Length: 264
Image (cartoon, rainbow, N blue to C red):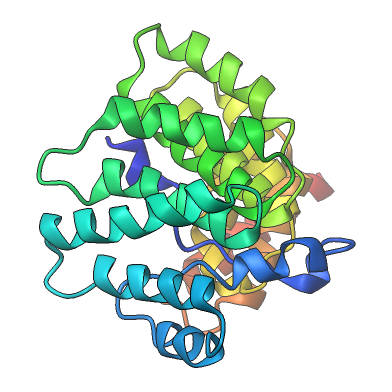
């Protein structure tokens, strides 16, 4: 299976209550948009009198214009290149660097994976502890999991070391979930899968409802590893987060059985 389908990637947003001094990343977080996002209009409105921000907003608009076309991506690329060349260190310059990497990765008719990999790595190595620097690491991680040269186990160990540098909670969660799913999906180690998926589970999510499948996966792994208390806690959290999920009845019975086992 494609690990890219198992991870949290471009839909990552920073919640100010989750990390001390979140203001350091707040501006950069506002510069991350998806196709058709209404915030692009808001950004354009706020860019009045700011030519640099106006150029950035226009580049985003062109890049995500529907239907997505390579010629639009290349037009956006010229604007991002200019913004980055003028100032690679402010929020707009760093965001431009990220979108340049994304163009190589996702917006060409024939993706240039090697250039995307190099660009993402450059960003996270040169802009540590910054929103787009850490988001670039998640994209680099996905490329490495799917398209690395060395054995997957070696890649995972190397990526684990690199991921220890992340400080933004949403990015940490995405990292642990990607690594944990890789260990689990490819049958490499249930223990390592549990270690990472439990770490992702322990980082409080802004929207708990988006984590219900993770809760069930943690419960499955915990039960298989004899960590019944953790399994019960994950199932309880699932029942609280998913009040209308069709699996509630079976999950409730399963939790009751695990509690019975613990009592004995």
